[in-house]
Length: 345
Image (cartoon, rainbow, N blue to C red):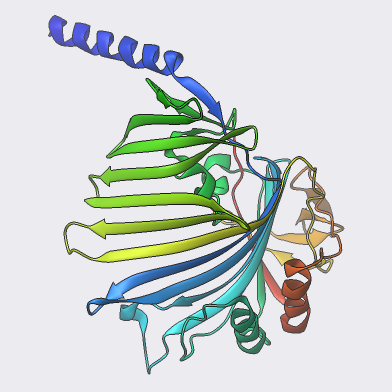
Protein backbone atom coordinates (compact mmCIF):
# COMPACT_ATOMS: atom_id res chain seq x y z
CA UNK A 1 0.00 0.00 0.00
CA UNK A 2 2.80 2.36 0.92
CA UNK A 3 4.47 1.62 -2.42
CA UNK A 4 1.26 2.48 -4.28
CA UNK A 5 0.99 5.83 -2.55
CA UNK A 6 4.62 6.54 -3.37
CA UNK A 7 4.11 5.76 -7.05
CA UNK A 8 1.00 7.94 -7.12
CA UNK A 9 2.89 10.81 -5.49
CA UNK A 10 5.78 10.47 -7.95
CA UNK A 11 3.36 10.39 -10.90
CA UNK A 12 1.60 13.54 -9.66
CA UNK A 13 4.92 15.31 -9.28
CA UNK A 14 5.87 14.21 -12.80
CA UNK A 15 2.63 15.55 -14.30
CA UNK A 16 3.05 18.85 -12.47
CA UNK A 17 6.62 19.12 -13.69
CA UNK A 18 5.54 18.44 -17.27
CA UNK A 19 2.88 21.14 -17.06
CA UNK A 20 5.34 23.65 -15.63
CA UNK A 21 7.87 22.70 -18.30
CA UNK A 22 5.31 22.94 -21.11
CA UNK A 23 5.86 25.76 -23.57
CA UNK A 24 3.31 28.46 -24.33
CA UNK A 25 2.66 29.19 -27.99
CA UNK A 26 0.37 32.25 -28.17
CA UNK A 27 -2.57 31.82 -30.54
CA UNK A 28 -3.77 34.89 -32.41
CA UNK A 29 -7.56 35.14 -32.58
CA UNK A 30 -8.76 37.76 -35.11
CA UNK A 31 -10.79 40.67 -33.77
CA UNK A 32 -13.38 39.76 -36.39
CA UNK A 33 -13.97 37.06 -38.99
CA UNK A 34 -16.69 35.27 -40.95
CA UNK A 35 -17.07 31.55 -41.56
CA UNK A 36 -19.10 29.22 -43.75
CA UNK A 37 -19.30 25.63 -42.49
CA UNK A 38 -20.80 22.73 -44.45
CA UNK A 39 -21.16 19.50 -42.46
CA UNK A 40 -21.88 16.25 -44.30
CA UNK A 41 -22.66 12.72 -43.09
CA UNK A 42 -22.50 9.55 -45.12
CA UNK A 43 -25.94 8.00 -45.57
CA UNK A 44 -26.45 4.81 -47.59
CA UNK A 45 -22.87 4.86 -48.80
CA UNK A 46 -22.73 8.48 -49.99
CA UNK A 47 -22.25 11.85 -48.28
CA UNK A 48 -25.18 14.26 -48.03
CA UNK A 49 -25.32 17.67 -46.30
CA UNK A 50 -26.65 17.72 -42.77
CA UNK A 51 -25.96 21.38 -41.84
CA UNK A 52 -24.90 24.65 -43.48
CA UNK A 53 -23.90 27.38 -41.06
CA UNK A 54 -22.72 30.96 -41.58
CA UNK A 55 -21.26 32.89 -38.66
CA UNK A 56 -19.91 36.34 -37.93
CA UNK A 57 -17.59 36.67 -34.94
CA UNK A 58 -16.29 39.80 -33.20
CA UNK A 59 -13.77 39.21 -30.45
CA UNK A 60 -12.06 41.38 -27.83
CA UNK A 61 -11.29 38.68 -25.23
CA UNK A 62 -12.86 35.56 -23.70
CA UNK A 63 -15.25 37.73 -21.63
CA UNK A 64 -16.23 40.16 -24.37
CA UNK A 65 -17.29 38.95 -27.80
CA UNK A 66 -20.22 38.78 -30.22
CA UNK A 67 -21.36 35.90 -32.39
CA UNK A 68 -24.21 35.80 -34.90
CA UNK A 69 -25.13 32.85 -37.08
CA UNK A 70 -27.73 31.53 -39.50
CA UNK A 71 -28.09 27.81 -40.16
CA UNK A 72 -30.16 25.08 -41.76
CA UNK A 73 -29.94 21.55 -40.38
CA UNK A 74 -31.28 18.13 -41.30
CA UNK A 75 -33.53 16.69 -38.60
CA UNK A 76 -32.29 13.43 -37.10
CA UNK A 77 -33.83 10.48 -38.88
CA UNK A 78 -35.65 9.30 -35.77
CA UNK A 79 -37.43 12.68 -35.57
CA UNK A 80 -38.71 12.86 -39.13
CA UNK A 81 -42.50 12.82 -39.28
CA UNK A 82 -44.74 13.20 -42.31
CA UNK A 83 -41.74 13.87 -44.54
CA UNK A 84 -40.59 16.91 -42.54
CA UNK A 85 -36.81 16.73 -42.51
CA UNK A 86 -35.38 20.24 -42.16
CA UNK A 87 -35.19 23.12 -39.71
CA UNK A 88 -33.48 26.51 -39.97
CA UNK A 89 -32.87 29.46 -37.69
CA UNK A 90 -30.66 32.31 -36.59
CA UNK A 91 -29.14 33.58 -33.37
CA UNK A 92 -27.04 36.33 -31.88
CA UNK A 93 -24.91 36.05 -28.76
CA UNK A 94 -23.07 38.81 -26.94
CA UNK A 95 -20.82 38.36 -23.93
CA UNK A 96 -20.17 41.51 -21.87
CA UNK A 97 -17.84 41.25 -18.88
CA UNK A 98 -18.50 37.51 -18.84
CA UNK A 99 -22.30 37.86 -18.77
CA UNK A 100 -24.10 36.03 -21.58
CA UNK A 101 -27.08 37.20 -23.57
CA UNK A 102 -28.33 35.12 -26.51
CA UNK A 103 -31.43 35.29 -28.63
CA UNK A 104 -32.52 32.66 -31.11
CA UNK A 105 -35.22 32.14 -33.70
CA UNK A 106 -36.05 28.65 -34.96
CA UNK A 107 -38.41 27.51 -37.71
CA UNK A 108 -40.87 24.66 -37.55
CA UNK A 109 -39.86 21.42 -39.30
CA UNK A 110 -40.44 21.48 -43.05
CA UNK A 111 -39.56 19.55 -46.19
CA UNK A 112 -36.49 20.71 -48.08
CA UNK A 113 -32.79 20.38 -48.79
CA UNK A 114 -29.88 21.93 -46.91
CA UNK A 115 -28.72 24.98 -48.90
CA UNK A 116 -25.03 25.33 -49.77
CA UNK A 117 -24.80 29.07 -50.47
CA UNK A 118 -25.28 32.18 -48.34
CA UNK A 119 -27.94 33.59 -50.65
CA UNK A 120 -30.11 30.47 -50.58
CA UNK A 121 -29.74 30.14 -46.81
CA UNK A 122 -30.80 33.75 -46.19
CA UNK A 123 -33.77 33.25 -48.52
CA UNK A 124 -34.79 30.07 -46.69
CA UNK A 125 -34.67 31.71 -43.26
CA UNK A 126 -36.58 34.76 -44.52
CA UNK A 127 -39.34 32.44 -45.71
CA UNK A 128 -39.44 29.87 -42.89
CA UNK A 129 -38.81 32.15 -39.90
CA UNK A 130 -41.03 35.06 -40.94
CA UNK A 131 -43.54 34.38 -38.16
CA UNK A 132 -41.34 32.41 -35.75
CA UNK A 133 -40.96 33.73 -32.22
CA UNK A 134 -37.65 34.82 -30.71
CA UNK A 135 -36.31 33.30 -27.50
CA UNK A 136 -33.75 35.13 -25.37
CA UNK A 137 -31.32 33.41 -22.99
CA UNK A 138 -29.44 35.08 -20.15
CA UNK A 139 -26.95 34.12 -17.47
CA UNK A 140 -24.63 35.83 -15.04
CA UNK A 141 -22.60 32.69 -14.38
CA UNK A 142 -20.93 30.37 -16.84
CA UNK A 143 -17.77 28.50 -17.73
CA UNK A 144 -16.05 30.71 -20.30
CA UNK A 145 -14.18 27.72 -21.70
CA UNK A 146 -17.30 25.86 -22.78
CA UNK A 147 -18.94 29.06 -23.98
CA UNK A 148 -16.01 30.08 -26.17
CA UNK A 149 -15.97 26.57 -27.60
CA UNK A 150 -19.27 27.34 -29.27
CA UNK A 151 -18.30 29.81 -32.02
CA UNK A 152 -18.17 27.75 -35.23
CA UNK A 153 -15.02 28.30 -37.25
CA UNK A 154 -12.75 28.94 -34.28
CA UNK A 155 -11.48 25.39 -34.62
CA UNK A 156 -9.98 26.44 -37.97
CA UNK A 157 -7.39 28.29 -35.87
CA UNK A 158 -7.07 26.25 -32.67
CA UNK A 159 -7.92 22.77 -33.99
CA UNK A 160 -9.28 21.75 -30.59
CA UNK A 161 -9.88 23.59 -27.32
CA UNK A 162 -8.65 20.55 -25.41
CA UNK A 163 -5.06 21.79 -25.39
CA UNK A 164 -5.63 25.54 -25.50
CA UNK A 165 -4.82 27.57 -22.38
CA UNK A 166 -7.55 30.17 -22.67
CA UNK A 167 -6.36 32.11 -19.64
CA UNK A 168 -3.24 33.02 -21.59
CA UNK A 169 -4.70 32.50 -25.09
CA UNK A 170 -1.92 30.06 -25.90
CA UNK A 171 -1.29 26.45 -26.82
CA UNK A 172 0.23 24.64 -23.85
CA UNK A 173 2.49 21.92 -25.24
CA UNK A 174 5.01 19.71 -23.47
CA UNK A 175 8.13 18.47 -25.29
CA UNK A 176 7.52 20.25 -28.60
CA UNK A 177 9.81 19.64 -31.56
CA UNK A 178 10.49 22.56 -33.90
CA UNK A 179 10.86 22.13 -37.64
CA UNK A 180 12.39 24.84 -39.83
CA UNK A 181 11.97 27.43 -37.07
CA UNK A 182 8.37 28.32 -37.94
CA UNK A 183 6.79 24.90 -37.34
CA UNK A 184 6.08 22.98 -34.14
CA UNK A 185 5.03 19.35 -33.80
CA UNK A 186 3.98 17.57 -30.63
CA UNK A 187 2.06 14.60 -29.21
CA UNK A 188 -0.67 15.60 -26.77
CA UNK A 189 -2.33 13.13 -24.45
CA UNK A 190 -5.69 14.10 -22.99
CA UNK A 191 -8.55 12.32 -21.30
CA UNK A 192 -9.75 9.59 -23.69
CA UNK A 193 -7.93 11.20 -26.64
CA UNK A 194 -4.40 11.24 -28.02
CA UNK A 195 -3.40 13.78 -30.67
CA UNK A 196 -0.56 14.67 -32.99
CA UNK A 197 -0.61 18.40 -33.73
CA UNK A 198 1.38 20.67 -36.02
CA UNK A 199 1.53 24.43 -35.34
CA UNK A 200 2.68 27.17 -37.69
CA UNK A 201 3.64 30.78 -37.06
CA UNK A 202 0.77 33.06 -38.08
CA UNK A 203 -0.01 36.75 -37.49
CA UNK A 204 2.54 37.24 -34.69
CA UNK A 205 1.32 34.05 -33.08
CA UNK A 206 0.54 30.42 -33.93
CA UNK A 207 -2.27 28.39 -35.48
CA UNK A 208 -2.91 24.70 -36.15
CA UNK A 209 -2.17 23.37 -39.63
CA UNK A 210 -2.58 19.63 -38.99
CA UNK A 211 -4.32 17.66 -36.25
CA UNK A 212 -4.83 13.90 -36.01
CA UNK A 213 -6.74 12.60 -32.99
CA UNK A 214 -7.77 9.17 -31.76
CA UNK A 215 -10.67 9.01 -29.29
CA UNK A 216 -11.45 6.11 -26.97
CA UNK A 217 -15.03 6.96 -25.96
CA UNK A 218 -16.52 6.87 -28.47
CA UNK A 219 -13.93 5.07 -30.55
CA UNK A 220 -13.28 7.56 -33.35
CA UNK A 221 -10.51 8.97 -35.54
CA UNK A 222 -10.52 12.67 -36.49
CA UNK A 223 -8.24 14.42 -38.98
CA UNK A 224 -8.00 18.18 -39.54
CA UNK A 225 -6.09 19.96 -42.30
CA UNK A 226 -5.99 23.77 -42.27
CA UNK A 227 -4.39 25.84 -45.02
CA UNK A 228 -4.11 29.49 -45.93
CA UNK A 229 -5.38 30.90 -49.23
CA UNK A 230 -5.87 34.31 -50.82
CA UNK A 231 -9.17 34.97 -49.00
CA UNK A 232 -8.36 33.56 -45.56
CA UNK A 233 -8.25 30.05 -44.11
CA UNK A 234 -9.83 26.80 -45.25
CA UNK A 235 -10.23 23.72 -43.08
CA UNK A 236 -11.18 20.19 -43.98
CA UNK A 237 -12.13 17.78 -41.21
CA UNK A 238 -12.99 14.09 -41.38
CA UNK A 239 -14.33 11.81 -38.63
CA UNK A 240 -14.70 8.03 -38.69
CA UNK A 241 -16.43 6.08 -35.92
CA UNK A 242 -14.91 2.65 -35.56
CA UNK A 243 -17.98 1.01 -34.01
CA UNK A 244 -20.43 1.48 -36.88
CA UNK A 245 -17.94 2.69 -39.53
CA UNK A 246 -19.99 5.85 -40.01
CA UNK A 247 -18.26 8.87 -41.49
CA UNK A 248 -18.74 12.61 -41.43
CA UNK A 249 -16.79 15.53 -42.86
CA UNK A 250 -16.89 19.29 -42.86
CA UNK A 251 -15.48 22.15 -44.89
CA UNK A 252 -14.89 25.51 -43.22
CA UNK A 253 -14.01 28.74 -45.02
CA UNK A 254 -12.85 31.64 -42.86
CA UNK A 255 -12.77 35.08 -44.48
CA UNK A 256 -12.95 38.81 -43.68
CA UNK A 257 -10.35 38.47 -40.94
CA UNK A 258 -9.15 41.59 -39.15
CA UNK A 259 -6.65 41.90 -36.31
CA UNK A 260 -5.93 44.32 -33.52
CA UNK A 261 -8.98 46.60 -33.57
CA UNK A 262 -11.30 46.61 -30.55
CA UNK A 263 -14.98 45.98 -31.26
CA UNK A 264 -18.16 47.38 -29.74
CA UNK A 265 -19.88 44.31 -28.28
CA UNK A 266 -23.59 45.00 -28.60
CA UNK A 267 -26.87 43.55 -29.85
CA UNK A 268 -27.80 44.73 -33.33
CA UNK A 269 -31.51 44.84 -32.52
CA UNK A 270 -33.13 46.05 -29.27
CA UNK A 271 -35.18 43.93 -26.88
CA UNK A 272 -38.35 45.61 -25.70
CA UNK A 273 -38.66 46.67 -22.07
CA UNK A 274 -40.95 44.42 -20.05
CA UNK A 275 -40.24 41.22 -21.97
CA UNK A 276 -40.45 38.37 -19.40
CA UNK A 277 -37.21 36.58 -18.58
CA UNK A 278 -36.95 32.91 -17.62
CA UNK A 279 -33.77 31.71 -15.91
CA UNK A 280 -32.71 28.09 -16.34
CA UNK A 281 -32.59 26.27 -13.05
CA UNK A 282 -34.60 29.01 -11.35
CA UNK A 283 -38.13 28.87 -12.82
CA UNK A 284 -39.54 30.36 -9.63
CA UNK A 285 -37.76 33.68 -10.24
CA UNK A 286 -39.80 36.27 -12.11
CA UNK A 287 -37.67 38.59 -14.19
CA UNK A 288 -38.09 41.06 -17.03
CA UNK A 289 -35.89 42.92 -19.50
CA UNK A 290 -35.49 46.60 -18.62
CA UNK A 291 -33.19 49.22 -20.17
CA UNK A 292 -30.53 46.79 -21.31
CA UNK A 293 -30.55 44.66 -18.15
CA UNK A 294 -32.32 41.63 -16.70
CA UNK A 295 -34.06 42.57 -13.45
CA UNK A 296 -35.92 40.48 -10.90
CA UNK A 297 -39.56 41.39 -10.41
CA UNK A 298 -41.12 41.24 -6.95
CA UNK A 299 -44.73 41.59 -5.89
CA UNK A 300 -45.59 45.23 -5.58
CA UNK A 301 -43.50 46.15 -8.61
CA UNK A 302 -40.06 46.40 -7.00
CA UNK A 303 -37.11 45.23 -9.01
CA UNK A 304 -33.57 44.02 -8.36
CA UNK A 305 -30.76 44.01 -10.93
CA UNK A 306 -29.61 40.44 -11.63
CA UNK A 307 -26.37 41.40 -13.36
CA UNK A 308 -23.84 44.21 -13.39
CA UNK A 309 -23.41 44.43 -17.17
CA UNK A 310 -25.51 46.66 -19.40
CA UNK A 311 -26.07 45.18 -22.85
CA UNK A 312 -25.96 47.89 -25.46
CA UNK A 313 -27.58 47.94 -28.88
CA UNK A 314 -25.69 49.11 -31.95
CA UNK A 315 -26.46 49.45 -35.65
CA UNK A 316 -25.66 46.43 -37.80
CA UNK A 317 -22.28 46.54 -39.51
CA UNK A 318 -21.86 46.49 -43.25
CA UNK A 319 -21.68 43.46 -45.50
CA UNK A 320 -22.94 40.17 -44.10
CA UNK A 321 -24.29 41.67 -40.87
CA UNK A 322 -26.45 44.11 -42.81
CA UNK A 323 -27.94 41.33 -44.96
CA UNK A 324 -28.35 39.12 -41.91
CA UNK A 325 -30.15 41.69 -39.79
CA UNK A 326 -32.39 42.85 -42.65
CA UNK A 327 -33.59 39.25 -42.50
CA UNK A 328 -33.98 39.59 -38.73
CA UNK A 329 -36.06 42.76 -39.09
CA UNK A 330 -38.39 41.05 -41.56
CA UNK A 331 -38.68 37.90 -39.47
CA UNK A 332 -38.79 39.24 -35.91
CA UNK A 333 -41.85 38.57 -33.79
CA UNK A 334 -42.27 38.20 -29.98
CA UNK A 335 -39.84 36.68 -27.49
CA UNK A 336 -39.65 34.37 -24.52
CA UNK A 337 -36.57 34.46 -22.37
CA UNK A 338 -34.37 31.73 -20.94
CA UNK A 339 -30.69 31.91 -20.16
CA UNK A 340 -27.03 31.18 -20.91
CA UNK A 341 -24.31 30.47 -18.39
CA UNK A 342 -21.33 32.44 -17.14
CA UNK A 343 -17.93 31.48 -15.71
CA UNK A 344 -17.67 31.38 -11.95
CA UNK A 345 -14.31 31.53 -10.31
